Amino acid sequence: MVETKSITPSENGPYFIEGAIAIRGTDGQNLAEGKERVLLCRCGGSANKPFCDGTHRNGFEGTEVADRGPIASRRVAFKAPGITIFDDRSICAHSGNCTDNLTKVFKLGIEPWIDPTGEAPSEIARVVNMCPSGALSYVLDDTAGPDATPTEVARPQEVTPLKNGPYAVTGGISATSPSGEPYEIRDRCTLCRCGASTNKPFCSGAHWDKGFEAEGV
Ligand code: SF4
Ligand code: FES
Image 1 (spheres, helix red, strand yellow):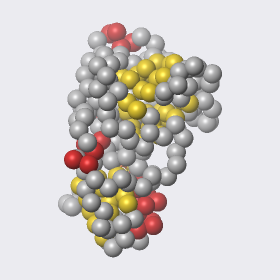
Image 2 (spheres, helix red, strand yellow):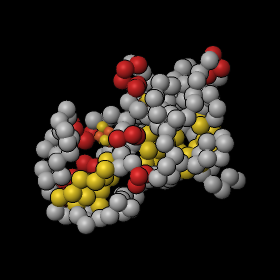
Image 3 (cartoon, rainbow, N blue to C red):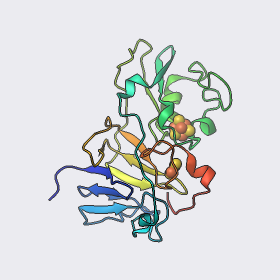
Image 4 (cartoon, rainbow, N blue to C red):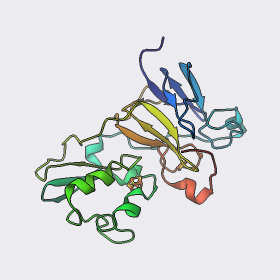
């Protein structure tokens, strides 16, 4: 029995998933039922997605380049009465859940792109909770300091392959490199599965440019 749940991007290869983590299929079933270790495709080329079929051996280059520093050192705070929105642009997956669902606050193509006064804090919180990458987070407090711990809703520890996009990882599962270097644990993050991210192992939105196609939720 593997006690610790973890995700490890292997060197130029798949993600090693350990500890009976559910892999959610399109109709909600656990694709990894009964398994304590699975390999998930990271190069985007597997014919057996989301699982690895060895295609990465054709020359996949999966070097990790994401910043390992503290999240608090990267994020920017936007404050309005009753709320502080945090934004870590480095890990946005460009899913558009924010700009599609709350245009009064999240403004495509305008700087600054976040207006925290544009809607009630409770509605902003509802939409920020839809951000799969965790680039956006919040606290319902406009006096929050730079090291404040964001409010998170309870999410299961699981991996969900998103349609034509990354793996959405929820529940604070640790991501650690083969070298043993950890990333700060996030309640949610998106990991690249198209092979083209410029911020590996996290998704950078490059799957859009690549025209990546894969089944998912
Ligand atoms: S990942 Fe989050 S911040 Fe980026 S576009 Fe999607 S909802 Fe917005
Ligand atoms: S899945 Fe988004 S950049 Fe690869």
